[in-house]
Length: 235
Ligand code: BJW
Image (cartoon, rainbow, N blue to C red; front, top):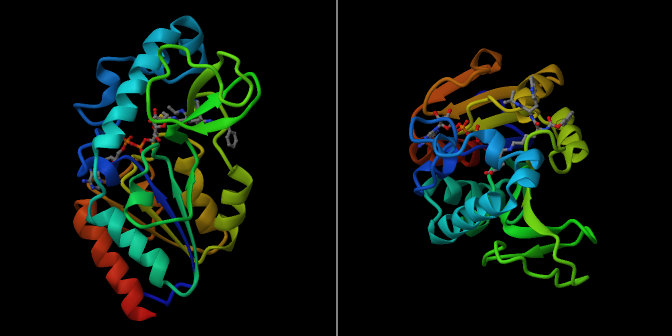
């Protein structure tokens, strides 16, 4: 390890949940194979065929509920409990495996599979069942619930808080993401411009790999516990 970090921002992507059995997006067996992205992950796709999109996310919700956290999630939970400095865990993932791995302060910038959003009254509700049969909103009763997911063309959640954290970080760590989707793909540059050291942990080099000070290649379940041990041992 170089200098002892005091303020860490971590960004995770689908790769950290791959070893929990949740498929990544851009791998050969990626989710988008059966469903072109325009069909299931845009507001226009939802307007065109809401039943297809609700069915797609009903299935994703069931997969999330059946999955278990792996050693990478658990290591980040341990880091949150034991690291003495500032820590922000930002995930692009819609699963709750970070929380079940022991992290309590997780920012889901692309939304959550286990949450539903009422377009009529803007309320969000924890949701484990189907949305396909058009349930009424528990708050206002309207039948206007959609998955609480950030689709292409929509604004990710809590960007201001994330940009503030990136500006104050002295270490930015990106785990299991291809760097193909913005604004998350640009976080490494933003953190670097503010003077943070930048580290990538991924199975293969991401699209923005050249922006990182250091890249470690391998499975998240091995690299993440190893890195967490280093940070905690240094502190
Ligand atoms: C392992 C591993 C193991 C595997 N261990 N590693 C042109 C230029 C720039 C931007 C745009 C553009 N045209 C359009 C845009 C904007 C657009 C965008 O980025 N499009 C790109 C396609 C270019 N972005 C948006 O529309 C976003 N909104 C936006 O920009 O608003 C305006 C704005 C302006 C200013 C500031 C802020 C905002 C919204 C993006 C919403 C993304 N939504 C999705 C789907 C919803 C969630 C869901 O259904 O699950 O989110 S898309 C999908 O991609 C999902 C993911 O969160 C996201 C990122 O994917 P991720 O996590 O990187 O997964 P993979 O599969 O790509 O990579 C996995 C990696 O893991 C791989 O590298 C593997 O090697 C690795 N791996 N096993 C370690 N065991």
